[in-house]
Length: 276
Image (tube, rainbow, N blue to C red):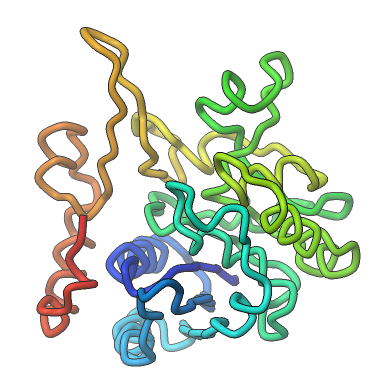
């Protein structure tokens, strides 16, 4: 099975945690593809991280692989100019370049770096995409702000099964890149995909954006809203252990959090390893 992550050096801890959670629950060999770039002074993920992750993951399954692909030049040649200064990092848009990276296979599961795996996801990975570009779960709040309230078909882009063969053929990602270049949007890559892609909706358990449930397969630590006693947005990421325990009451990932800290102890002096 093939997994895709994207980001710069600021997301190395999230990527590693997600990898560990996947290896804990998957019964197959996984190839992890990571698209990285250096943009606006933030460094790309170094090959040293990929080599370290490879060593750790092959102790779990000798067939696991980590492939790091630096696409700085591709990104610089097609900058999403209208959306470089939004509150969403341009790194979110790296996945829209996957179609012009020849190493990326025809079927791949994209995950945000704040998504952790709770159960085997083979059923999701084998979802039929014959007539679809992507498969995903409706966004928790999207129907109220971006989508259709009745259809609830505005997808959260944190977990997306990608039919890369079809996407390469129909030019979807190229059209999304052009849209991000020319039109300012609140969530540029997610909005462009929802506007242009042929989408298949899959069950909520594959991108649970709320409280953990018994059937949760992939838990996505998205920003959520508290309305009483006063409205506020709350963001708690899986590496923020104290808040994870005290506010979300989530302890299911303690073993991989400990393994992450233990395995990466030499990198903890790296300012990009421990971050908010």
